[in-house]
Amino acid sequence: MVRLKLPLKHYDEGGRVIPPVAMWLCLAFLARAYIVFLGSLTIPRHSELMLKLFYPAKQDMYIGFITGIGALLIAVSCSFRDKIREAGFSAIYVAFKPLLLMTLLADLVSQLITASNQYWAFSWSIAITLCLNLYALYWLISSRYLVIMIQDWLADSENRPEK
Image (cartoon, rainbow, N blue to C red; front, side, top):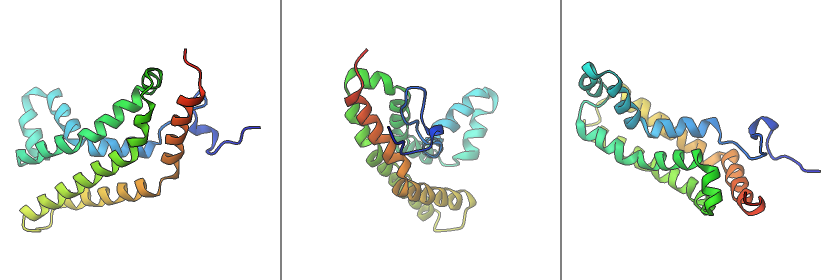
């Protein structure tokens, strides 16, 4: 008899652990510069206005692009999990948690630098972003679900026969 480590709703049809919703939210938060940029492209007439609304200083958007690369890599590798397993590159999943940690810390440092450049004047956007960064960092450090998912995906690549 196989004992599941998580409730049944956290598994897909193949019996593999699905990524937690909190991870997808964290990845979307870290890739927010890309999301804002793509959103601005959907409204061509007001794209510059929308970018200035979210990123008054252009260098903040560029820094967001750089810090969001780790989140994009994790999201893409989650989306192509089966292809990665079939290609034999499943060891990449070991890097999920450290890469997410580095991305969160880079985003946190960039927000602190932005606050410092504004001479620590209170800003709701910086305050909310810092709070979300700290909450995401807490989730990452304490998430049992993420550890179980990574272990399952690594075991999945070792135990499942190739197609």
